[in-house]
Length: 336
Image (cartoon, rainbow, N blue to C red; front, side, top):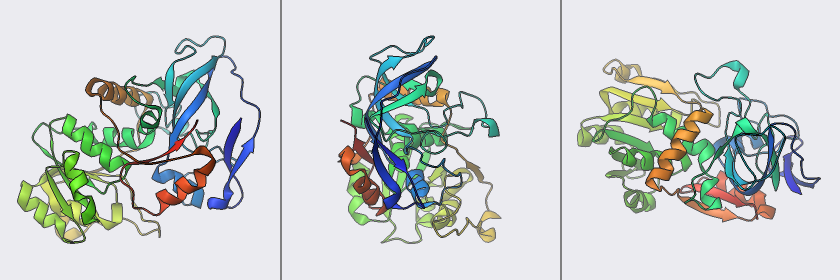
């Protein structure tokens, strides 16, 4: 089989393809034929050496992938040959709260999905909805579950409340889609005016281009009466405006706490002293959360937004396209 591994000092030259024998399952393991994978921001951070968790040397990258089970080990009870599956981002986190003993991640400390075949413990995988193509099914593990967890955390937004999404990357687009499923009104901000119509087509009720309205927080607060839930995917660059846009008791789910240069999020005291907003964090989610999200996806037959599909042999091009930043939805690598 063909597989990619991260080698050397990082950077795109460290993404190297190898040929090796396909894995065989041990007890309670499954072998998955990977049909598609997709990229997330954490994957480019791992490639560049800026991710907070140190990857294992020679790791197979990418947490997100979809395919079918082609072999099972003795004792496997969760799956059968032919089942359509995807992996769980935090492979050992089944349910409950995160703790240090279950931080292993596919594509970082555990071999990930950028391979023709992968070996998974049966507890590390979940079934996929039947209505999704392989390319679509490969997009949910990280960005989809992060958006789902942000919306279904301590206090689920009620129908009619306002949710704010920022940008047009995977998490932001999934958050928009899931918020609409919940009956919420969605405000979206984007740095590029050319994307406003596409965000409206996905259901956004109010869209602002930050290139035209740099101080967008006050405008959103005036137009909506205050945002009830902000899914802030840009951290330092957008946090102050997110706080200004929030309602008195709003919630801000902060996904990025520092930018690529290491600048941290700063809380503007003059704004926060007038606010009772709650600021929280999300670390993707558990396997049970992934299963709950995919059940909702199946019920509503939701389809993810795919920006581009790149052939397996051109995986480096997928990384480079993702890194340039002008994406709308998910960048997928074909596994055929």
